[in-house]
Length: 598
Image 1 (cartoon, rainbow, N blue to C red):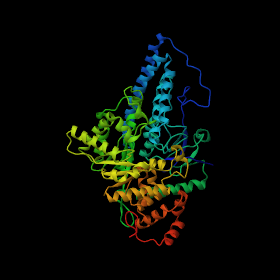
Image 2 (image 1 turned 90 degrees about the horizontal axis):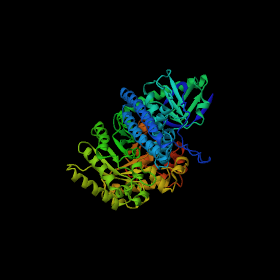
Image 3 (image 1 turned 135 degrees about the horizontal axis):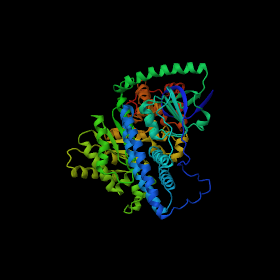
Image 4 (image 1 turned 180 degrees about the vertical axis):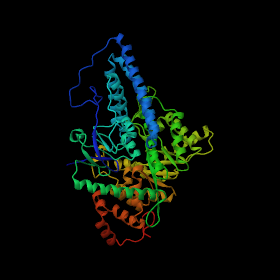
């Protein structure tokens, strides 16, 4: 028996047989090791050889497009991953763009097609991995997926057939690229274990859509697990048990039965409003990065989409997404949501987050490269106007709202609102969408009144707000228990927003993955937050937890938490023994919706 710990990609429990898969690529597309000496220069080809190599690229592209068409058929036949058609279509478009770049590289550098493809993919992946955004950073997997597919065709290799698996199979691999996950949709597998893969990647998204438990981050997993082993997969805790004992099997079976009972209870709860024990209604909205996530928003009965990130539309393309292309993405989502809101956050680009078409644009204003969020958008007005036009058009027939990222104060927010109103007039639209501001910078905290005076709603972005308030590096944020929204300084900042928003009668939503943590959610409710936008996969668990909370107790705990000096003290406060003791000592009385004593 061996117990292995990783990280959760998709919650749930699974018992099955390991199937270790991999690729027989003799030439892999990977980032270079910066600690190793630079590789030798690739062998040059003659100018006369260029058309031959370009033809080979065209042939590999054609074969790859046929593969993707087959994947689209698979996705169409499975309702759980039907929305992955969007992903396959994106891959098809990206494949054409990559092939064009490869042929340019062949002609310019006089190198063979394999070398050109490798260098184009490595360059693109390098750019994506430096992006300061988890969701967008993980799009590098899509690029490598496409590159590996075309490389296989160039080398004449056949990939592992993932659709032919034994029953109760748990796939074990170093990494599953997005197209693998789609191919697995109709295979009957019960779980996924990988060494590499993030929570915001397509594999994780599709696994959640299929309801398949998935765990990643297990070192040397394909050496530690062999095909045929019995595995117990705990997707919630991120734990794998290989070759369990009879007692462990029995206990795990009991856990599966109990989990199914709780899942049924959560689904029932989510079919109606989410309320605390004392009747306070808490609205649960979904964070969406692709329309694949929208399936879960609808299936779990969530109140709408509180945050739709749009950066991927730009970062995956070498051409500017025009208004119509964006409208074709927004309109079906809005239609599926019916009368539920779709909050579209305008693109958050700039700094090291530049799409290919901008980094190659000679007419681009160089001064905008160091800007982020709304300031970048205002510096590149042509891009923003195109996106706003698509949103305004779709908003005429649905509850679609605009959310601007990284708002600094009233001045930049007023400029953005003015542009929306210009677009409304140009479109001869009869309705102006609601306009909101992301509160995620320290500057916004000091400019709350001037922002709230203009806003229809505000959303607190806890991920970035925590990073900037605590002067933390993004990489540190993933590891340090000190860098968390449970820090008293962040809690005080959230309280400040809630109190100010109440003065202006402005709705407040909290967006961020930590909001799905029941302990943090209880503090948010205690601070007066009644709207949470979270990962749809956590909605059932959180709704169940909220149903056991009391808002007066939550308010008292939130006040005590703000007096703590560290996140550790806050977590200690929330332990069953400590919370009861502290509440008794504080002589807690009923507390109103914003956490002030009555």
